[in-house]
Image (tube, rainbow, N blue to C red):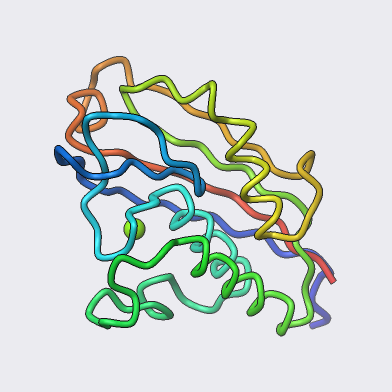
Length: 161
Ligand code: MG
């Protein structure tokens, strides 16, 4: 069967929050008392986005491509991982159409940083900023996000050839 020129993917990631760590979301460092615990810089939103793109390509997940047991990826800027996933997308013969990222966290308010996040992602994805959506939501103090134990992120991506 001939495959469609479009493919979609979704991604999901969670990281635990701990004191005295940088909080990096979509490549932007947000001033806060807590940050994400991770092998990398803990950019949970970029990790979800990488998984959305890898999902669209049916190429597995971020853990397969960048194992957290590898010293190579210790403390790595997640934007480097995203750029690698963009390369994989292009190598597979696809362009990125648009992406939509949702960050679930109780605090702090990230709205003032949304445009900087979109710019960051647009650069790495090599697409116009109006094709990059970043949204944030609290969970009304419910669950691990609401209790500020962690941050979750969801992402969707459309690719085409
Ligand atoms: Mg992660």
